[in-house]
Image 1 (cartoon, rainbow, N blue to C red):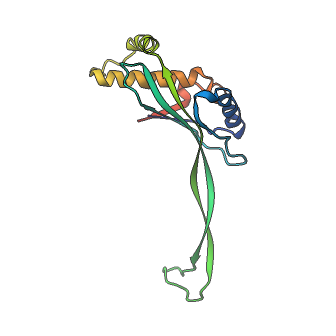
Image 2 (image 1 turned 90 degrees about the vertical axis):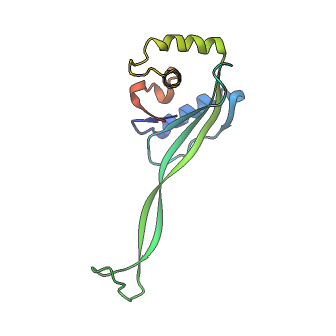
Image 3 (image 1 turned 135 degrees about the vertical axis):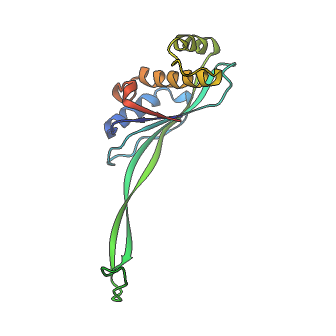
Length: 167
């Protein structure tokens, strides 16, 4: 599952977030500082469950900075009908592509008893239309993921409503 910020994240917000993660380096797989002097775009935070919940919770979390990069290509000049002008002249076309840069990659581990407490708090909030056991479990994992990101004051205190969840 993935959270995407609804707003663009500034270079300063990325820098502060990376500095916070550098203080917990023992639990981090990889940490790089964000790209500087790039345009601001929404951030993504992706989480994959890697351990059965019966043993506690363990998920891999990846924070990714997105930015646009302009690529220049050459194209032959065509007339209004789409035919080659035959002059051998070319024009430069700039195309923006979205690049991704992993800033931090780490494992979130929550012991079984603490995970049970979190799930117990969330069970009363499950929407009535969700009735299947695995769907309830998935919903609780999603909500716990959002709560963990928000409770860490991610990107300067964004709230749950500042993210879009995709599966």
